[in-house]
Image 1 (cartoon, one colour):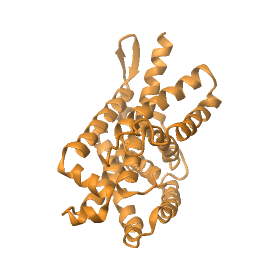
Image 2 (cartoon, rainbow, N blue to C red):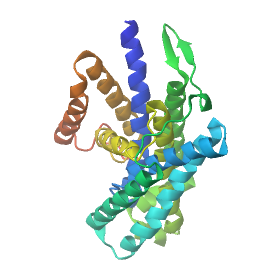
Image 3 (tube, helix red, strand yellow):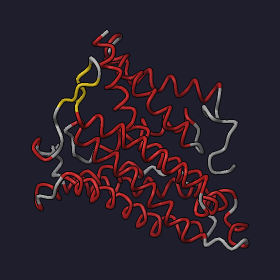
Image 4 (tube, rainbow, N blue to C red):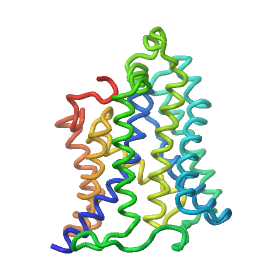
Length: 295
């Protein structure tokens, strides 16, 4: 039972990373209509910037997280304005945006590889909380607790922002119909910039926390988060932050349990088998009958 609880917490923390990333990924798709293949690079660059802020500038852990989150958000805005805004003006559609995002993915991935010299870096152990905390009968690393709390705060905060504020109403309006939203007095450009920043920032947070948890700050960091975050979005529902959060956690727990009790070679296979099953049986995801942005 002790091992079961320990692995459950491990899976919850891992799934929280998937969910954090997935929330931003789904937010971009729901509001801007972009299936952004470059989204994983935001996480990679956030972790890289946070790492160098610690190593070169000797900033404390909270500042490193803030710097990484800011880097992810700013990078998302830059990519959106350079790559996607011209396509929106020309009504290029989903395919044009997808191809553009793949190009940015390759470019930013190559630059990240250059920034890390194709190596896997790691935050020095003394620069982040690394003690064990007793939670009932289980000893839990502090970083896992921080990751789980980060997901809860972000998921609740973004959900309330979308559902309970005027900014959220504007985001829902733009997600439904940008032209009609503009005619109704919504500044679509501001909403787009805010959405891009939120999506990049949540991806950046997942990147920094994931880089610390796996001791892997490299250009490959975002690729794993992209695939698993995409699965969380599909299973949870592209337009529902609640479903994405729940699905991400469940995917993490399933992945850890399969690795522990079945085979580590089957971890990814089970994850994507579950993805295919949801696409066949419930293509709208867990909360398919309820729209997060298009309520």
